[in-house]
Amino acid sequence: MGGVVSAKKRVFGIFIVILISVCFAALFLFNPVRVPKTKHVEEVVAAVDVIPLKIETSKALIELYGTVKASKSVSLTSEVSGKIVWTSDKLIPGGFFKKGEVISKIESSDYSAAVVEQENSVAAAESALKIEKGKVSAAEKEFNMMGDKDNKDWERELMTRAPQLKSAETAFEAAKAKLSTAKLNLLRTRIKAPFNAVVIDKNADPGMVAGVSTSIAELAGTDSFWIELAVPVNQLKWIKVRRGDDAGSFVKIYNDAAWGKDVFRSGEIIELGGNLEENGRMARAIVEVKDPFSLEKENQSLPKMLVNMFVRVAIDGMDVKDIAVIPRYSLREGDKLWVVSENGTLHILSPEIVWKGRENIFIQGVDNGTKLITSQIGTPIEGLKLNVRGGGNIDTGESK
Image 1 (cartoon, helix red, strand yellow):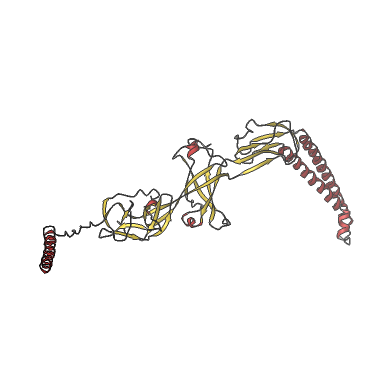
Image 2: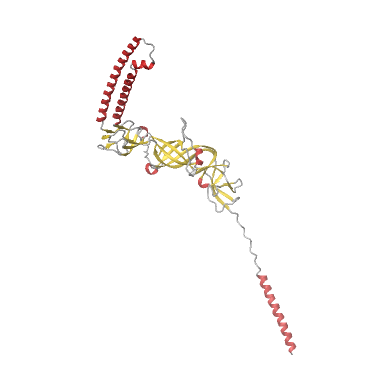
């Protein structure tokens, strides 16, 4: 009995195992494992904007800042002493004087009297000289009548009154010199402008007693002003300096605040300073501007320049040949350029930078027609495929 039960249990266990196996087989048969399909990875293509490069000749436009200075300036002082009796109505800051125009007058009566006194002294000395010459003539005749050939030279000079004649001649010349000094001092009572000038500061008024070297006014010349510029040494090779009749680099001077936008005065580079700044990186250039106050008829429509005015200067440098002009923003980090290769992919190159301006850069080492990428690329990798959206021309700005 017990053996029969055990056999039934074994048969039942085997049946259960078979049943479970059949269920699992049916499950996998009707629900097969799905193998995930491989997705197609699309190739990355960057859309870019380009401009074609052109090999050309352009001018290097050098933009700097500087301060206006007077090319001529003087502290006008009195050369004689006395009371100031008159000053010109134009002796005020900003007043203009022509060369030789009287600015101020010093009381002249004493100096006029000195002239009369010296004129009398000259007349007296001249009369004395004439009398002495008559005496000499008589003495020479007397000496010749004596016929003594043995007298020495010094004896002859004494007998013919040579020392007395020399003294009279000296007195006459001294009197004339004193008269010239008296006349000069009289002229100096009229204080005149030494050149065409504008008054910077006034230091004298009528009634004031002036001594020798008393300051009357501070003057600046009006024929021309200078602008002193600090120029980077590496820019000097593009600047031309005036030499004789050969003009220097043409310059435009701007002051947007005082004159308005795009209004300018013209100037010329006339000289370079003889030394560099202490750090050795900057040189000094001098720009000359004619008729800064626009006094001449043909310049009256031009804006006026003032001493110590701070201005922006654009220098037309020399021509630079066989270069391509690129916008400054297209130069990438590390002085690299992004261009489109012949097969339409990104090519990163290092051009030779010839000159850098505020807006544009001159480069060499590229071919005519090279497509320069001006837009941004998220991940610029050499060989990246590109989709060129369009083209255009470069606004060179500095090029001619």
